[in-house]
Amino acid sequence: MSNQTASWVPLSVLTLCLSLSGCGLHWPWRHQGPAAPQPVHELSIDGTATILQFWDRNTLLLDLTALSGKGEASLQAVHGWPVRLEFKVQPGSIRQLEVQAAQRTVFEVPAAGKPLVLKLAPGVYVPDTPQLTIRWSAAGGLAH
Image 1 (cartoon, helix red, strand yellow):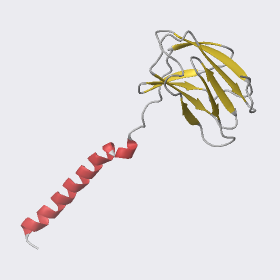
Image 2 (cartoon, helix red, strand yellow):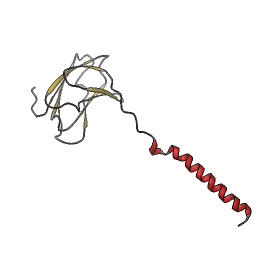
Image 3 (cartoon, helix red, strand yellow):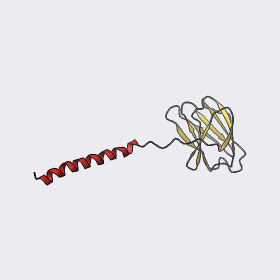
Image 4 (cartoon, one colour):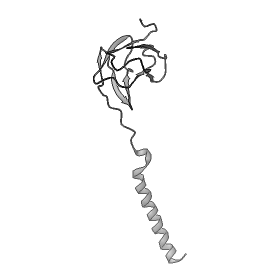
């Protein structure tokens, strides 16, 4: 091996080691995931239940995963009704969710599984709906 080649090898190895150590600071899996959504206050909620509200793009998500047993809450728009509403529920905690406004909708919730999101169909509430009532039950057969 000539002297030129011999001096080139350690220099290239040193360059390679420095570049790899620099990449160690920017590995893709070192970045933290997206921040948790921040609660908002778009609807006034009357009742004893704790219901958190979050934006999921242009849909207001009401987190009902803390609910269990039987209960009821009345929702009123603070600044007007959002275009879309959805409810996140925990299977096993409740069996039925009823939404009453311009129309009535009843969702059946599975007995087990991961939390799921129930999307409210358009037309269940309209822009001039004074309030929306939700009722939940751990057993089937909500009162009509």
